Length: 258
Image (cartoon, rainbow, N blue to C red; front, side):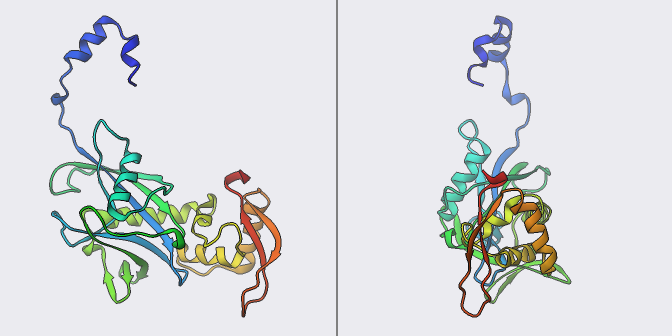
């Protein structure tokens, strides 16, 4: 884009020089991140931060913050905010959706570009920073009243979340559920993607889908969708877990076997 002016006509250059950006109102832009992981109980969790300032002070929220216009892309802003608020860096991000309702923020019109990240628990070392008072993992719970989140004895509902973050999280969960049957997202949540059993992968699918899956059918789909396509390979070894029947070990090779 910086080279565009080199090929402009004199007339267009004059137009660009005289253009007044103030002719149009500008919304502010934020980059926000939904981070999923699996805990030691093989349950799907989300990382939330407690806001330290207004608006929604002391409410829980997904990590994120304002984009520095003219200096960074939305993805760069997401990575920077993630590090500033949680200390996490080098986390692969996938763009989820852009939320742009004019009344989603009480301060002004704020457009949020939202990303998702899938991180194994052992790699998820975090701490609250910047304007976040706290950062904590919450188990994602479903009950008759809908979605809520639990960390120890603390239970929070959508009313405890800032802005429209409950809707953002719901969309992220729906998208994850829809993707895992044809995209290798679930492998990113394994404790060790280089050596795992079908059972370990099945637990992740069940937690994401929030339902039990038939073992035989899951094995068939695993063989058809992932093993035969070269996404995973059979290591030719068996697990040695105490109290468990030895099972075949597999290695995730990357999307398309890359």
